Image (cartoon, rainbow, N blue to C red):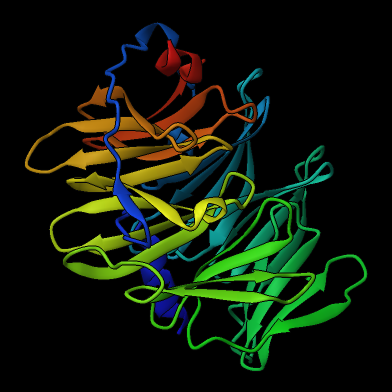
Length: 355
C-alpha cells in the first residue's frame, strides 16, 4: 500500500478534473520579462556530488531548506541555506524515500521536512535535529501526516483515522479507515483534512472538530474530464474555501479549482505539457511546464482569485522545484541542464505580473 501511495505522489503532473457547474477559464496570458529582478543563489554543489536538487522551501525571510536525492536510490541530503550569509548547514544525510515528495513543517521554535514514512524536525536556532519520526519501520501499517505547524498529526491506520496532539499526546478518532488514502493534506489552520479516496475516484474532506465528512465523487458529484486516466493530487486553497484537484488524462494535464462558497463552481486550466514543479500561496500558484515536442520550459503563475494566468519566464533549462517567499511576493526555483544545477531568486514577481 505504501508503494502505491508514493508512486502517485511522485506524479507531480498536476492535472485536470471537471466538476458541477464547470466553466473553462479564458485566461489572460501575459509574457513577462523579469530578468532585472533575477539573481542566482551561490551554492557549492561539490557538497552533493551525484545528488539532484528535488525540492526547496523558502521557510522564513533569511533561510531555505534544500532537499537533494539520488535518483532511484533511497538517499537524501537535507541542507539549511542562509540567504544573507550564504552559510550552508547539513541537517540530515541518510535514508529517505526518493519516490515521494515532501512538505515543509514550521512553527516559532522548529522547522521540519516530512515525506512518506518520515518526519525530520529541527530546532530553528541551533539547526540540531530534535525528532526523527519514522513510521516506515513500524509493525502496523501506519501513515502519519503532521499539520503545517506540527501541533497535531493524523495517523491513518487499519482501525481508522486518528488525530494526535503532539504536546498532550491525546488521541481522537475522527473517521473509519477509508478504502484508500492518497494525497493527504491539512488546511493551514489545522481544522480540516483532505485526501483522495475510493481508488482515486473521489475527494474526502473531514472537519476535525465536528468529525463531519464530505465525499465528492467524480462522475456523480462532479464531472469527470474527458479521457480521464486518474486523479492525482488534492489540497486546499485560499483558507480552505477552495479545493484544488488534479487529474491525469490521455493527452493533456490541467488544474481544477472548486469554489465551495459558490455551489462548487469550477475553473479548469488545461496544459498540453508535463508539469515539473509547483507551489501555492494564499492567492495564486506557480508551476513549471515542459512543453510537448519542444526544448522550452515555461514558468507560469495563476491567480485563482481573479482567474488569470501569467507567463513569468521561458527557459531552456528544466525547472525542478519552486517555492514562494514567506510574504508571497518573490519566488525561488531550481533548474537542471546537462548535469548543471542552479537556484534562482525572482524578486517582486507578484508586482511584475500585475503591472
